[in-house]
Length: 471
Image 1: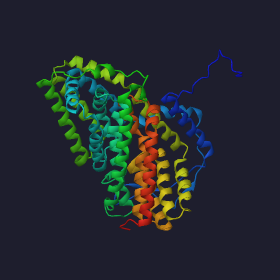
Image 2: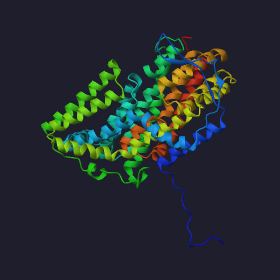
Image 3: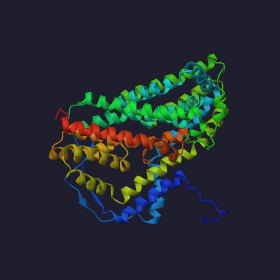
Image 4: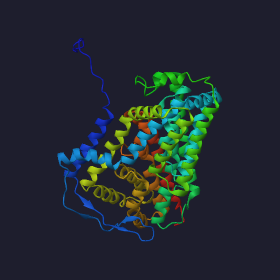
């Protein structure tokens, strides 16, 4: 016979708010500054490339600089300052999208897309993921995905999917290409130059990885999308108020006017110029934000929205995205605390020492896993390459695996975890634009990350055993 009081109910565990999760990690990082022995590598500028590289033999202990409670709270506004480019990019993109919605062009354009894909919605997922994967593999598309998210959300909702599917189609699609590093200058290009390998050598082997990651992601996303379409209760976002969800469902049949066409032409030209700038002019977040702002102002005026209404819509869009924009700054404060405590290099040194005792193929897998952990602390492709490749290159020579294998371990480790770690500015920015809570995204993405980790481990092991060259 049960001894439970029938008047009591067992409380179900509830995942904490995103801000609570992130601040808890900030707190753990601060505690780590009292426990982990502090240490640093010496860094010097490479005159040939202009990059700041570490000296792999220079690791040494330094005086402990624990993060005090007051400095812990100071880290939050400092994180906001450090993440200002992404934060204001999110605010401006949110505001501009609201202006474009005010013209009616977005809704009319989505209506045409719905009619074009009606009955063939399943093709939309592999097609969009392939397009963004190619851009990730060649242009290194990462933070730039943010500007595409609102349109993706509108389309996904309209065909019966949820906002998570929209993020997966675009952000995870770009992550396939970015991670596989086929011709990614920001990761493979930098890493190979440090490892003194020919630029983009070993591309055939990386294309195999690209295909495996793509098919795994498409199959996984399609499975989830089909479940959501069959029953919205299967969505991880079910029960969360999704602003605008109902009105998006009724977009069919909206009349498409010449004015709508002109506004969307301005949007298209803006995206083409953005792609050109990223590829040939070195455009990054500031330029992206400026292009999007100009697109909103010009598009609003062409769409016959008065200047005052443009301003009102812009402010409303910024306000709507505040929660997500501030998440980026809070996530960046984790790195601020780790840097203040001088424990990032200590963690890297300890992880590298673990890899050094492993035999060939296992060492390659170990390198990949180590790079994945390091990416939590240094979520920047080129920054992580400049920090870790000077250490991993001689380590690869010492344990008998090719430098090409070490590069692969790096770009898989750097790329995969960007889709799940809360310190990734690109991920948090994308989730902010889609208004998808981090904990809900984590629930969706972690099984795919396990699949990708298995694929990456097999690829790294094969590269080590096959002695993938050139050397």
